[in-house]
Length: 331
Image (tube, rainbow, N blue to C red; front, top):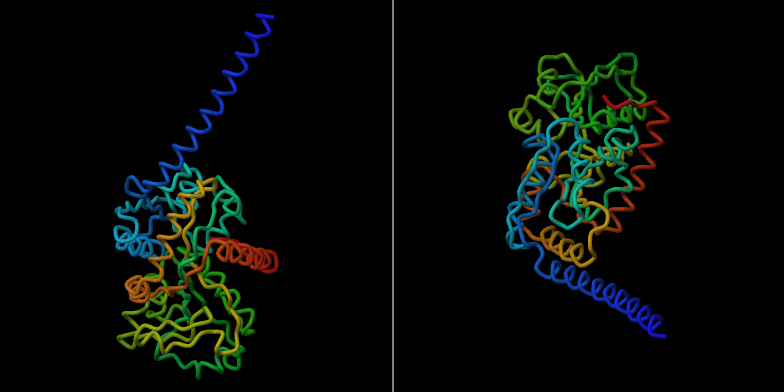
């Protein structure tokens, strides 16, 4: 009887310990969420200083103290962009590491680059904007008006020279879709970056360049280049850039702009996720955020986590179809 009583007592003590431990862990997590963030947040971006994801990280850094009461540390990871997103996917899901993502991330997964499947290892916290891809030509080129050019009514018998920056696979994708939908013949040439693409245009080595519109801003203001159209369904609203039509306006649906978002590792505690989501939402609604986005040539377009997830899925389906249909390969 005493032995049975002793066993029962022992089991009771073990169960009590488990329950107390669970309570303690829950309390610790609640306490951690309550004081989150307790230290600066690391924002991971691919190592292209001044590039699209870097620009967004700088804007978040500027507003972080206002909405999170903390500064942020921008960590630029060298090498392929997948290396940066691998860092985010492999980080501890405690809210202290977030990543700036773009549509290129989905292509990385489709081509098997990187250590992780980003569709499952990362969780979109929010969508915050997009980078319009611009089709740019020299101003002194006789291409006819925009509508006849976009409709493929000119230069049908000429093989055009298309160039794009290899920094962002979306430039290559847009050039391919443009060629196919316009019915024009073209040779594609990948260049190291946007600056090299613009230099090739100015030197007459390309007929059309596909670049980030901000990279061409100086030459546009000098009148050396003109933009045929940009991707996306809404125009930029910053000064002269607001005069540039979209492909959509000209009757050509090219849905592949390079959207930007914020992602975190899967498994973040709900209370921490809620606190971080609320801060990002407040930032995105701030007039200063919108001003800085527009100043840097980015379209402000906020989406909640669920909507951003849906956009990931839709973009993944479109990119998968393009990869299969065009046998597209990232360069």
